[in-house]
Image 1 (cartoon, rainbow, N blue to C red):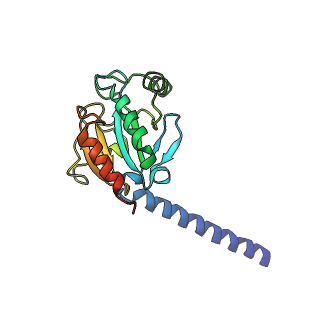
Image 2 (tube, one colour; image 1 turned 180 degrees about the vertical axis):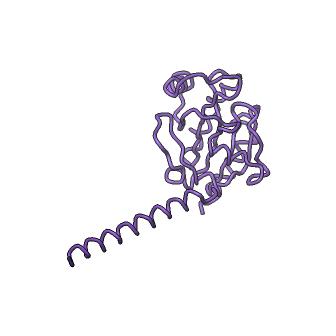
Image 3 (cartoon, one colour; image 1 turned 135 degrees about the vertical axis):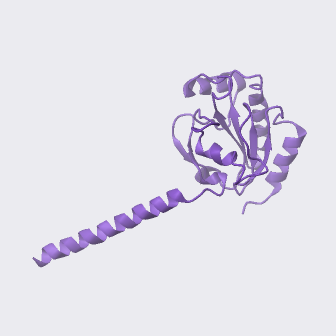
Length: 199
């Protein structure tokens, strides 16, 4: 009998610990994001990537891309700044989207092949996502939230809208499609961000 009581006690302790863990997970899941690094996304191969784990302390350029757009040649510009500044801590994160003119109709595998063969892309590519409307990816809901980010918020207007994010995960600036990643206004901002020390 005493052994049964002992087993029951152990089971209750284990159950209590499990319930506490679940409550902790639920609490963490409900915490409002305060930076880009709070998000988990899927890479082009479908693997989950916790941005904080992989990119904490880095300067990021986050961009929604498309393969059949008049701005598609900006893949080359993105690759150029990636190669130039990657050693200093720059990462370019590309999120293909079919939201504008259906200019990204391909599968993730097709997009990956296109970027590699046509533009020699070596920076990280992520799974195709919606970046506007009710179904928009949570990361993009945060990026475009005018309440949280009044200076850079607002709906994405077209492909190749670019967000510059500092080493602390906070949004520094937003550049619309017509601004090339290699334009002076953007490269100077990138260099300034790279000059800031990680917190």
